[in-house]
Length: 176
Image: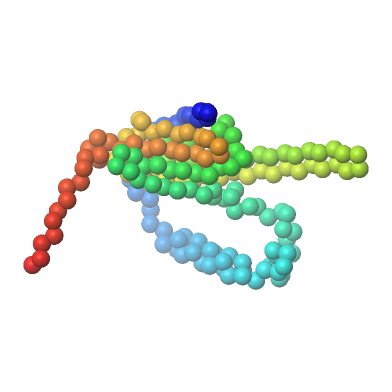
């Protein structure tokens, strides 16, 4: 059985931005220290999945998926491929943009569940959004970037230019 694959439009924007991102070592250090403390606090969990002094209810915490979905980046001879796991999302809620050498994937997930039975009423809503950006090499042909979405998996194909696809020359190593 052939399954339908939905092609998503890739928007190209012209923006003027600096050639390289500014170097901010203290921001990087701050993020790493925050991550270290988050990892450390994760070891002090009670049987119910909450830290010993954590007063915030577990159901009100934002999921880690909302911040960054799982992404794989692969390179072949002819293209780069970015694969993102976006389970439970629709292609209409996903946007792929390319501008100034930066590929940005954004998405928003909205779930609502309502159940009415004889002796109870259940209503749940959850919302989350994400944004992931990738610096794209100059060897990518920006006009041929494609994005497809199938079974909760977004695949962005970034074809290489003809010059970048030329076979690499192997250089023999000789003993001195």
